[in-house]
Amino acid sequence: MQVYTPPLRDMRFVLHELHGSDELSTLPGLDELTADVIDAVLEEAGKLATNVLAPLNASGDREGCTYENGVVRTPSGFKEAYRTYVEGGWAGIGNDPAHGGQGLPYSVTKLVEEMLCSGNLAFGIFPGLTQGACHALGAHADAELKARFLPKLVSGEWSGTMCLTEPQCGTDLGLVRTRAVPRGDGSYGVTGAKIFISAGEHDLTANIVHLVLARLPDAPAGIKGISLLAVPKLLPDAEGRPGPRNGVTCAGIEHKMGLHGSPTCQMVFEDATGWLVGEPHKGMRAMFAMMNAERLSVGTQGLGLGEAAYQSAVAYARERLQGRALSGARHPELPADPILVHPDVRRMLMTMRANTEGCRALAAWIARALDRAERSPDPEIRKRAEDLTALMTPIVKALFTDLGFETASLGMQVMGGHGYIRDQGMEQYMRDARIAMIYEGTNGIQALDLVGRKLPAHAGRYLRRFFHPVQDFLDAAADDDDLAPLVGPLAKAFGALQLASAHVAEKGLRDPEEAGAAASAYLRLFGRVALGYMWARMAQTAFARRAAGGPDGAFYAAKIATARFYMDKLLPEAAGLWGDIKSGKSAVMALDDAAF
Image (cartoon, rainbow, N blue to C red):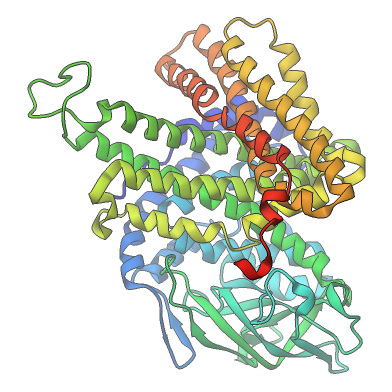
């Protein structure tokens, strides 16, 4: 029972009412972007997700991708769906108009991305990776390389990948062995093997542009010796048409737990022709432009799957008749009440709802920061937005994917034995969600990034970009009677986060293992407070809108009730996390290596 209806009303709420979409039209290049235009884009994207992509989700999972003699074929219907996607103009909605894109802001494209992930995550990976490649090339490639590749990638005629991982190196990219030898004509011969390459080979596009990490002959050792190259599957001719086959082959695809409709490839490069992206030995700078964009997108995957799992669980809970309500029969005309009446089922559904809607609000807040960072004419506004985005990227990636998996797991629990059965579709959401906690940097790596890089950066400047608006909100809402039940728990959890930040910073300076042992709990604590901040703001907006009257009173009442659930039932986790952090590393590091 895979059920999905685009949550357009909630998307409009966070975009227009909570974060104020009027600001978008004041940014350069967005002067004609009105709320009506945004709503029309979201509505059409919703139709694509529900009418084209969602019907292929379960069948694509069952059929999977096939590999034969270097050729990878996607599941039935994927090629037609991709053609519909491209013909509808969706491939370039967020890209620079100079390369054929439509130039829509992140505030809109991230919501579109969420719907694609809810409808069919395996399909969404293909265009998602291409967007990451466009981002890296747009930020770091020279004019000639941009002209050669970006128009085709932006149009969706070609697709992109990123090729980082090798058999001997994953997170530690300083161990990369792939070589790139200059040929004297501006190109390089790239030789090496890459693994775990999503969409490395497929039949959806006429060409695939691989962004490959490699070492030049004079490269220094370690991470400082990595370069980035663009290596197409087929070499383009002078007119940009795909020409002869490059020295790039797919040696096989992985047999995976989930995401069966998306091939994960083993790629071999044999003196393949490639071109340098950015400066020699500065490949990680260029690749991180793509990786950070991908980490935010992977967070969106967790959000999208969580929404689909929530809706499917609610539909089941409304229909499944089991037992009677503890307060007495709610539907005496039926042989039993729907399980929706039972407190524990409602606890699970409310947890799913509160986490998912909170993540959507936080995602929209970060998307707005991305828009300011990219478009604002004010350097100080851009800098503050860049700081906030840098701070929140590991939190969004890790928290959203953790909660997406937890939401799918709760959805399975709501459905009981039927949730465990493949035909019902809930177990697919759970399998698909699990990988998001691993790829694009495991969630443990995200936690280390938060405590090791972001927390101490610029003497705590990044932290201030979050702490200051939260404190300003708490101060302004202190005398608001409606918000009092929400502001109190948020203030307490925020205080714990402030104490934990100082504790981790101080302990980590003396002993990095102390910071490492606390990292995952600290990220979770930060994420819980960030969602609490969003829920308090959503409740404030809902109270004001409900008081103004209108037809959406039930929607705002539900927002307020869900905010109270979050504060009462989920935010108290912060106290336990602070206790975990204070306990230090001793229990983690005490066991001798040989005892494992």
